[in-house]
Each structure stands twice: as C-alpha cells, then as structure tokens.
Image (cartoon, rainbow over all chains, first blue to last red; front, side, top):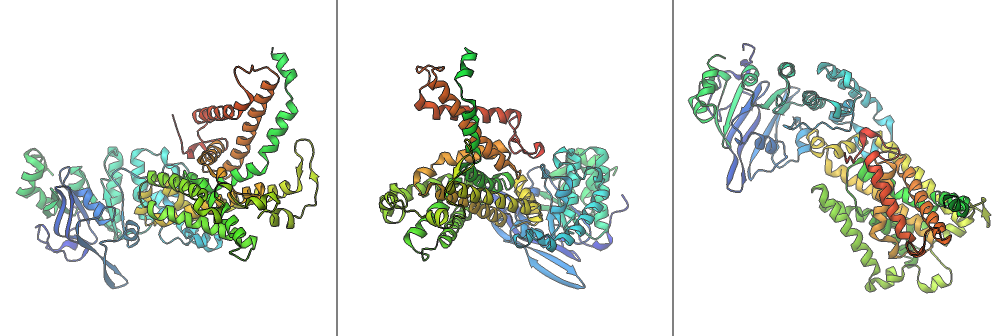
Length: 288
Length: 350
C-alpha cells in the first residue's frame, strides 16, 4: 500500500535495535523467564512516535508477554523501559519499569487485550465513560457530591458519544456490552481505550476473530488514529493487515528481536523468511 | 384430611408471627449486613464469606469499649470504637489478600471470622470479652444492667408501654431499636445508591466485571477494593451493634459462621447489585422462615404430622431445609433474585 507513513522514520536502518529519530518508547535489556525458557530477552528496542508499529512473530515468540511486561501486567526479571513524552514544546522521559498497570496507563500508554475485556454487565456507554482519565467523581471524596463532577461528566459524555459515532456503535449505546458481537467488542475496547487520549496505544491482536468486513473498518480506525498523532503498537497475525497498515515491523522469535524494518524490508529479509515466515508465505509476499 | 388440616391451622397466627418477624429488629440487622455485603459482592465482586466478622467486630468493639470505660464510658464513643475496630478488621483482611485472586479473599474472610470468634471466646481474654459468657458480665446481667440501657432506656423517646395491635404489638424498647435499625438500613441504602450512581461506583462495577480491564484504563483497583471492603464492613458492623442493643448482650454464639450464610441467602434471595435487594431479601427470608416454622409447629401439635415423622424439636432444622429448597428453586428460575436486574445477575446456573 502506498499510504504507509515513512516520513517520520527518515532513513532508519532496518536492523534489530536500530536507533529511531524520535522514539516514544525505549526498551532496554528486558528479560522474562518462565522456568528455563527465556520468553522475552530484548537488548534494545525503540518504538518510533507517530507511526504504526507492528510486532509479528510465530506463536510463543513473546509478543504478548512483552506487551504484558511493558504495561505492568507482568514483572520482568530485569530491564528497564522508558516513555518519552512530548507536550507544549517540552519533552521529558519517564521510567516506566516497576510501575503498576494503572500508573502506566495514566502516563498515556494504554493497552487492549487479545481476549476482549468488555465489561459485560455494564452498558456500552458506561464502558466508554469508564475509559476517561482524571474524572474527579472517581474519588470517594467527591463521589457523593455530583456538583463536583457533573460538569466534567457531561464533557466526557460528549466525547464518548463522538467516539461511539465514529466506531459505529451509537445504536448500541444503552445496551449491555454482553449483547455485542465479538467484532463490536473489539471496536468498543479500542474506542474505550481512546477515551483517555493516550499517546501510545497498544493493541493485542485487534483483528483476531473479527469478520472481514469489520476488519476493513478496524484498519481504517487504526490509520486514523495515527493520522491524529497517536502512536500505535500492535500485535497481529493477519499478514495482509500487517503489510497493509504498518509503517514499521518488529519481528520477534524466541523472545528476541530478529529483524525490524518497513514492510518491504521485512518481507525481503532472509532471516525473517527462514526463521519465521517459511518459504510458502515468502512466495505469497512477492505479490504484496 | 385436607379439610381437617385447615380447621386445625390458626391462619391469623401464622401470618401474624411471620409478618412480625419480617419487620422486626432481626430483619433490620440482616438487611443492614446484607447492604454491606451487597457493596462487597453485588457491586465490587468481592467474595466476603466473613460478614459475621464485621458484625462481631462492631458489637464486641462497642461492648468492650463501653464496659471497660476506655472511652470515658460514652456510648457514642464506644460505638465509634466498634466501627473503628471494623475498619481495622477490613484492613487486616484486605491489605494481605486483595492483591491476590478472589478465592484468597474468600478464604481469608472465613478464617478471620473464626479467629475473631474463637479469640473473643478464649479464657485468656475473659476480663475483656467475657470469654464464653460474653458481655456484660454475669453479675451485671443478673442485675439487668447492660450497655444497651443508655440507648434503649435513657435515650428512648418512646414512653413506656406497648404499641401496635394484634401480632404487631411491640414494647417501647423493641420499637425504638426497630426504628434505629430500619433508619440505618435506609441511610446505608441511600449511601450505596448515591455511590453507585457516581463515577466511583462505575469503577467499582468495572472491577466486578474485569479487574484487568479497569487496571488497563488507569484505575487503581487495589485501592478501590480496599475502600469497598471498608465501607461495606462498617455497614455490616453497624448491623452487629444494632443487634447487640436489641439483645442487651453480646456472646460469641451470635457470631457463628452460619450467620454469614444467612446473610448471603438474604442478598441472593433479594437480588445482588440492587438497592432494594437486601431489604426485600431480608423481609422475605424472615417471613418464610417463621411462616414455615409456625406452620410445621401447628401441624405437629395438631397431630396432622405424626410424631414418628417429625417432632417439634426438629422443626428448626426442617425449616432450614425448606429455605434451602426455596433458594435452589430461585437460583434456577430467577437467578437475579426477587428484585435484581436479569442482565446484571451475578449467578447464572443455566
């Protein structure tokens, strides 16, 4: 596809651990072992700001484990990772290692899950409202005093309705999330994550189990996110989707980064073809 | 035979007694404890199988502070002491176990409830808790002196006498404690209603649905669960305090694990995650219990049920069997309870 956004990347070397011009996330020496197995073992990895980066790799490559580690849902044996923020012409760096999941989310790095976590016995709208950050009424001190949070709630409500409109879920607004289809739940989870206006969104297999028609619109949503300035990091197995929308691809195998580069770099990389894709898929990729 | 039965049964007494209990102090205290449990389980999804620990903490805390005169012998300060004790119990359950999976909390709560009951009962604490005799001491009890006197006698605005009619006739003490009990039920329900319609309540419900989803959206799940455990625990401890005022004494017999499961029954019967659930549940629970007990008693007394099948001593056990059958039936046909929302039902056996 031609609309991949490579301008931000400049001439970054397509080698594992290469330095990016403007990284949003830097991962250093992160190791996580399960017994004797090194599930994740990353020396150095930078994720570029403002683009769509895909993590690919065979099953058991450590993609989801890495997601869990950097979002605080799992603890690494060692290593650190830092978040580079940029706002009002100022930039600063936050060490995220050792922080708890909610602290990391509040820094502006929000994730979704491979198995969707829609809150089944809450309405679609309540799911959305929950996503908002810094609602004062979420503190027990203010909860019983609606005057302290009503106005903010109305702003959040407006935002939630806009997002539902965009993700074509408006008609389901007052339904319980349990009634949504699998694909709609993926959409809801993504929309909900956007409520907090994250800087970096991590999507764990957003296309898995979604019907092909909905996949198309999911892809458009992800591209729109990037065009609005949100950096996207996603794990996916659907090769067409990955080649179609990723600006940069990181290939993991056995916990390590074995290659990175643009989709065309990666599809030509012999290490990737040998270690992961196999010759059959390599043939298929020639047509992309 | 059937005609014979109807002739023997005193229908007025049957409904009268059942109705009396369903609006009585016991129903109010069970309802209050269920309001607390509803916040824990119905809204936050915390499996608290130690409701009775909070009730015991409140009742014993209050009674100890008052009889020991540690807080200047003021009953209000003693009540505050009882509530503070409940907060300590909530912290000691929550801090170690709320970070773990839900089942660990369930185990911890059962354990703490038993540890508390057995400690209160121990000879070693005889001077403070009265050991197996409870509080107030035997001498005080023989002299009819109780910590409850300030509330039920000195501060009782209702003049001496009996009020109401038929089976719904109460003396001024019982009536006053009933008023206190049901007022607290209303206030606690109002508090929960206010909390659950706020963004705080939204986070609480989200935690019930999926903790990790709430975490991923930046909510400090541990802190919310602890807040829920404390608030619900304090409400349940008030139930223990009201019951202590009604009885006039505290004893470890009142805080056996079965009370916890009665309160679970009340909540599930009425409907978890609903404001009216604990109230309707408790009234129904006591109505059914007393109704079936009285019916069985009359049937045994009139000889309609032969002594060979059921003796009057066994009626108390049989009514629990009936209660169990009723609960199981309800679970099958109405898992959301009497007034709960079907879509928000916590238990679904189908």
